[in-house]
Amino acid sequence: MAQDDDTPPRLRGPPPGATEPPDHVKKPQIYEIFHGSSTSSDRSNLPSASPGEPATEGQAGRQPRPTLKEGFESIKSDDFLKVHQIPCAREGLMTGMGAGAVVGAGEAQRRKERAAMARVVEVIDRKQAEKKAQAAEAARLKREAEEKEKTQQAQKSWYKFW
Image (cartoon, rainbow, N blue to C red; front, side):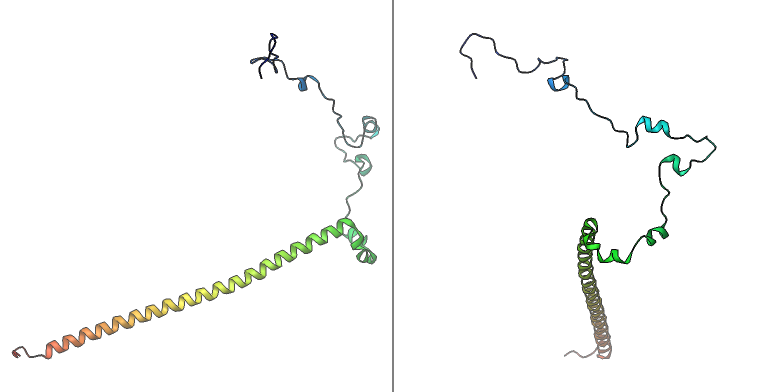
């Protein structure tokens, strides 16, 4: 774009080799750092254990890890009747059923393909056996023909001229 007046052209951006950072870097952004649910004042209230002494459950602020037996005992028979109302369970069941259907269909297809391949191998083996048998029969007939020709040559009298 040409300028009509005598004003010098406006520069766009810093000149080549400039070391000043661009405008978006000049304005720093402030970020908050979260250190979990406990604050520094909460941490100071926690009793500390001596190095040789194991920490108790209350010291770490955690509950004991549940066992498998406790997990099974927490399941009620009514839970099975309401499983469709739990959003994550419904989504998980739908995903599992879909994946099971895909895997099942793939396995049925694979079973058919395996049976077809077994038939192909059987047919190929049978044809190779037939070719081998035909080649052996042809070789036997050729040997018999040669032997017959030799015996005829041997029986022919050498003095007959006609």
